[in-house]
Image (cartoon, rainbow, N blue to C red; front, side):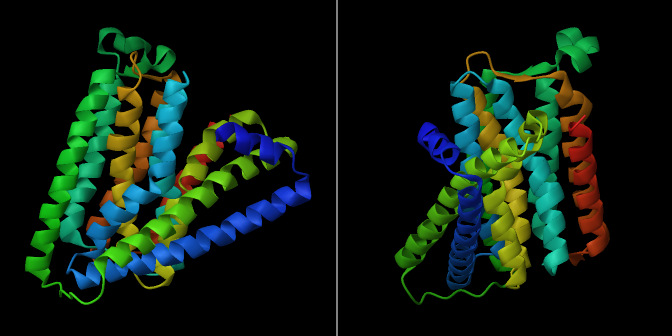
Amino acid sequence: MEELLTEFVQGLPIYLLLVVIAVCIAALGKGADVLVEEAVTLSIRHGISKVIIGATIVSLGTTLPEVTVSVMSAINGKPDMALGNAIGSVICDTGLILGVATMCGKVPINLYLMRRQGLLCLVLGFLVVAVCLPFSNFSSVFEGGGRFPQITGFVFLGLLAGYLWASVHWAKNVREEFGVESHEKGSTVMIFIKILIGLTLVISSSHLLIHAVEETAIRAQVPQSIIAATLVAFGTSLPELVTVVTAVRKGHGELAIGNVVGADVLNILLVAGASASVTPGGLFASGEFFTLIFPAMIGLMLIFQVSTFICKTHLTKSTGIALLGGYAVYILLSSF
């Protein structure tokens, strides 16, 4: 499938590539509309917090591109690309997507859930850095890098199962504590079908968009280092970007923040975990991970977490500027 898409976009003239990009963006928008509307309907009918829906169902769906790209990269002998895509997507989700969301509208903060899932996300960020450290030769970490062991990948997948179970438990507590109203009208099966259609449209269109944008960038003679450092992670995060912006513009900011937090957790536990579990030697983390990529991830996570405790009710545009600024610095440094 990947080879067919590559051959397809390579055979198109530049003006048709631009048409493909425009059509994919339109399809992304339509798919996101369906996804957000049906996810909100599901949460209302069954008394489930929008944050939980965003952090589980929506984020699981929109993280599929990262899972596909990273696992296939690991299987094809490119484990460094697999880990780079996972961590790069966390950086993109937290810095770019959450930053853009705050500029598009109000993004409410549910402190009850942020103190759990938000802090969990930060802890997992530090954990993935710790497991990659070469403790036997710590002094060479900035030159020789480290490794994400295969056994740790299986452990992370086990933690993923625990996270999904805990999310259900948290949802029940939110319903009891905040009195989320439950509605049983309508067909839940039909809602899930529409969610599946929305996810399919978002993921398939973003997949084609990645190839089209990459081919356009190559023809425009953008350096390969820039493409590798930014485009793959950005491209696989497109479903989250479109879904989050759509949710905020429709007045469902809780769904947006839940999607970002959930996607960050899944990028670490599912994307990195699954990629490592299929790689006997584990995932290689080059020196650049410790000099730039990991610090950028932790830095943006800290900005986000501190902002939720300072702002308390909703993320401000000042937070968005800080996140976007941090992401811009990361992109700038990665180009050197």
